[in-house]
Length: 277
Image 1: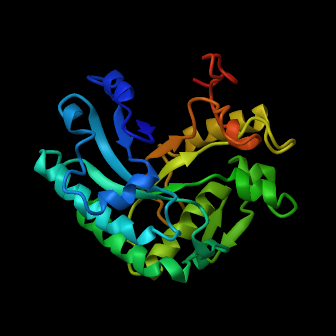
Image 2: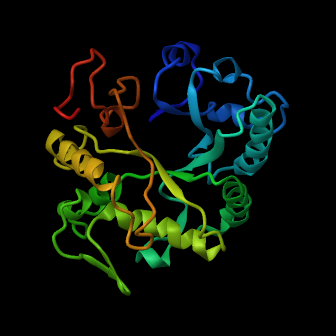
């Protein structure tokens, strides 16, 4: 699977006749227009017969925010546009950051911020109707690096050997599962526990905030994530496997300096940052 953040023609041309399932979305600044335009699928229509589109992501970390109310109308409009060009199997969704919860510890306490409860109910209704996942950008690195006195590195890197978090009858051996289940619990509280989650971004930076960001930690986290998600659900949903995207293929030297530049598996010259693939 491959996720791209806007429908760049050169990238879509390169994906013609590939076997990759593709998630693609417009720029955030285009979302308001997509909530109104009847031609919302125009950018991908020329590729519909030879690019394997799987999801259209409408809004990347757009919720919470001042224009969050446009997400559900845009999803409905794009759904109709996709059906009009015969792409009924392509699902629309949106991408949340990891912080729209007013409570997240313990995982069962997960609760959506009250400012987005109605918006998320509208979105969840569409997702359940279509059988589409809600996507999350979810990074154990950030809560760990901001509170290393209370979150162990082993727990953040999928190396916990005893249950550091006990939530009722559920034991959590890694931070990733705990973060996911906070969202599962939050969705249950608005009566949309049927929504399935997918991880649209996850990874670990290689530099920019020592000692937390390092090549060793990034390699360990991503290797263990790769081993974990294909065969493991979460304690709250043990039989539900999640599609998961690594962030990201290349380092981004045009971003603000620090960790944001350094999540890539490759440098811009195509040299690997560390052995992985």
